Length: 433
Image (cartoon, rainbow, N blue to C red; front, side):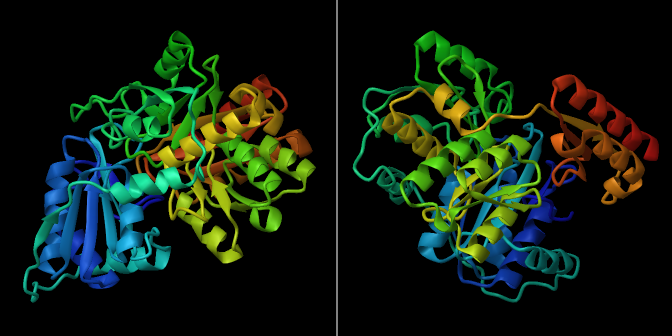
């Protein structure tokens, strides 16, 4: 298996086997070095199997492993940075329960650059017999330092008087989300926080906010927060149940940081998937927008290279670099709720004032094998559509980094024109094979 946009990922016990997880653990230890690692995972039925194998691989190479159990991805990243050790998460994030994955963090709590991933890939297929004395495994009961870290960002403020519904996606934050948010003083209602190993992301969480919208309206809440399976992403809904996606969340936070003099270099980092409306809105306020390929690790690399403070993805990965090394749904949710309370206006008004979203259509075209040159294969059709849209739209055709799909995205002045262009491009991708 090869690394994709966010670690290795595939169907558990088919594409992603215990044998491979064992070898990946050994190679991670050999290539990344270090004597300790922190490991956690989500609630999938396959996570325990893969974690046991991966941890065995680390231990066989002499790495002392601290096991956190079921925890969000950002907890592992936080602890890896705090302890100065390697980190790993057994999770396929927003994917269905049959999938699983392994994400790796270096000793600073950051995801690996391409060059390191390529070295690990090469090492996996050429592993010698272990020669190290096997190391011990240590179970870590909790991470109180992480909870304190989340609350510190409020700088003494509280969210008393706010009512929030949180959807834990039956995932890694199921036991943590309500407790953490309630400690801010907010009245918190938790839904989809009863994982059974197979219901992770099923009709809930950041990929499906329908039930969250219903709950927000039913409870008369100020807003709703939707996490994904490993809780490194956040989507929100306003009091009416309308979706507030990652672009709007980043726009709100960018303007808030700018107003408080905390948006370094007056710059925000986003990916090629970010809506054109975001870029236009930022331009009117004097905020510069730096664009990276899809993947929060590329956002992080750009943040560090430029010394910037905020970046993220439309899908809800948001990185506050002054505080975090990775996207963190709970962290972002607290920041967003705090911005709403300080502004004194509802989330719907904040979102509408921050940016106007251009109609965007995304079509996922299934493929049997990876198509890295998908855009090149349909270059003529892309050029034709771009010429028709001019400065009033945008086209993006790219292979998925996590699934066997080619993603076709079109933005245009109207939903109908975006859909027509996207359908035309999707058909061209299918015809190109």
